[in-house]
Length: 274
Image 1: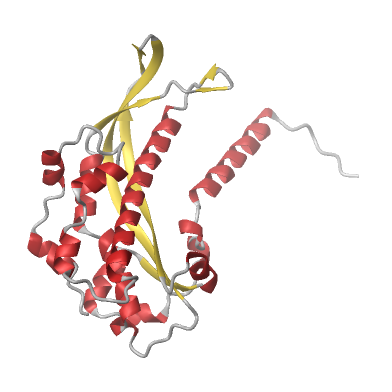
Image 2: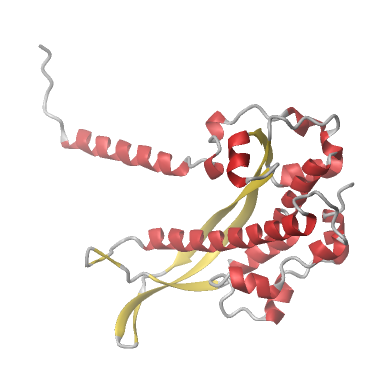
């Protein structure tokens, strides 16, 4: 029999710390939209290496992967599919929550300001096993999926996200858990609030994806006027609908300043050879 000595206080602290680190690592390794995580990503699809220059620009900017998965396509009823995820690398500054009363109810409000707001969008284009055109980058289906990538790498998105997060926000941190006031979870609430904004942005982008699918019949037909269609994206009214928190108190005039991008720059962004 091997005898072990008593577990010291220091040892117990180390065990707890190790458990916390493992839990944090599990949280941070969330895969992209159900795809393999960074440690298990498949070998890049060979088509990516043969992409012409104008597509390389979008592939690099959108961190594009191509995967073959019939089951996902069947679940969506699609011949091909582009999925995306918005990522925001951010930092915030804030002070101790301030107490106030609204309609006689005591609330704690937290004023925050983002000091770093670097956004990126990752993409996965999913194709079926039966899709094997001789010249994939000249094929209508893959071109259509790259139009999706162009939407989520639109320079107006970068301008919009930067402007949204350049504003100060006030968030309610007076929520209770088991009837006890939450303590020390301001950072958790800030992270939750930030993810709510990101989810709004993703909803807007998905709406614009759906608009493209409807206008092109899922890529079966060419758009009547490509330039007019893509120029019309980021419409103020549509954005207000899908970004209610992000655009609270944002006027049309302010919005137009946010997303004012030179029309020639936009045309060049979407000028993929057909």
